[in-house]
Each structure stands twice: as C-alpha cells, then as structure tokens.
Image (cartoon, rainbow, N blue to C red; front, side):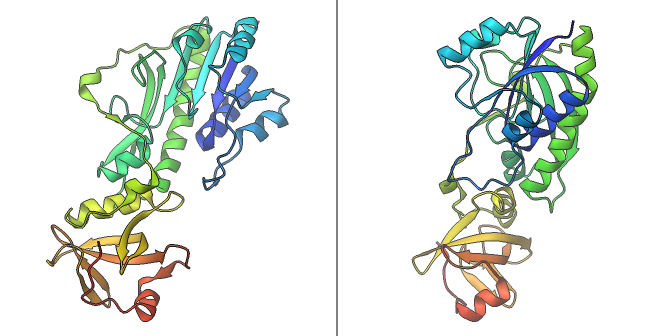
Length: 303
C-alpha cells in the first residue's frame, strides 16, 4: 500500500515539486496552497490548477486552522511535504505525519534560513546558494537535512535568474530523495545552526537605496529586487524613481550625485554606479538614454 502524502505548496517550486511527486507515482491525497495576493505580480505557475487537473482536493486556508487539523488527523498522512508554502506549520500539525514532515528550502542550509532566501543571497553578494530538503521542526529551517544541491550565483545574475536555478536544484534534490524516503533509507544529517544565518522577510520599502553604500552593494540590491520583485528605488526632485538595472564601474563622486548622463553615472560611498533602466513611479520604464532626454539631471542629487 502506498504512503499517503499531503503537500503544502505554492509558487514555481511548489508546482514543479508537486509535478515531480506525481510523476514518481506518489499518492498525494490533499494539497494546501494560497490565494494569490492582489498586490503581488503573479508570474509563477498555479499549484491549485495543477491539483485540479489531477483531481486532488486543494485547500487555501491555513493548514494550522482547527478544521484543517481535523481533516489531517482523519486522513493520517504518512508524509507531509512543504514546497514554498508561506505559513509556518505548527508542531501539532507536523506530528500528524507518521513518517515525517519535510520542507524544501531555497538555500544551501544552514545559510539563509528564513524568508526570501534567494533574494537575500543576491543582495548579500553571495557566490553560491542552493536547495535543501530537511525535516521540519518547531524552529524554522532547522531540522535534519536529507539532501541538498548547490548552485552558482553569477555576478550578473538577478534574483529571478537565481530563483530559476534553485527551482531546478530543488527538483534534483526531490528526484533523488523521494525514493529513499519511501524506502526508509534517506539520510538524516543534523544541521549546525551556528554555521548559518537567519533572514527576515522583505517589504517593498526595504528597496530604498542608500547612496553611502558601495557601488557593488547597491548593484546587488538592484539585481536582488528587480523584476518581477518590487524594485530598488531612490528619490529625484521629490519623485520616487525605481532603478531596475545598474552596474558598478570605477570612479569616485559624492554619494547620490549624478556625475554624467552619457552614460548615466552616480557617485556612491565607494565607486560609481551606472544606471541603465529607470522608471518614475506611475510612468513608463525607460533605458538611461531615453530617461536623460526627458529628465535633465546632471549634477542632481538622488536621495
């Protein structure tokens, strides 16, 4: 008799991992997902649609709700699997999975435990990250590791580029690990939390540029929150200005001061940043050349 599986999933990682489980013949009895947020750019595949196509019930209220705990207790799943599910799952719910509750996290744990790990890895200028399958415990992203796969972060990669790499790494990990979990032979490697770090969630206002930072640090922020994320921003003449693409170059100048318009160069706390794509809030996105034709800004100060 096959193990009964309950999946908590959202986003592309959730979609692709649920798809992989079904490809391997897992007996997925129930899916928990989320309603799409009206304030979020929905660029990823729908877990709910995938579940519907396979005739699997999908619940979008929290798995921790009392009525959902009762459903799970009656179902008595062998495995509970979480793939980019956005709610912390309580210990009472985790205990309902008789063979284990596992999460696929988008970093090479114990580095970048917590929220939005891909964005944080890019913002912090990391050269690698990855995907990790681990057992869930009360403390977030802290349980024993089953398997993990590392990916490279190129200097030019945006968070979107890295997210796609991490998605493929997550599939690789699940493809290797699921047969071992079913067979009861999967590793359980203790996680050394002292070797890692924990990151909070990010809000759109966290994208404000501090021009006293170095050009490389600002560049990492820009590429870490550029499309499809809310974007890095500054202020010019009292108007919010989004910076969607930039690149660090050699040079010096007062932090935030526009040094040149061809190319569009701005001074920072260390080095100079070339701005390549910009957008005043509520207006069209422009390349730098078109922006400076319509917005005289030489010598102006970004704040």
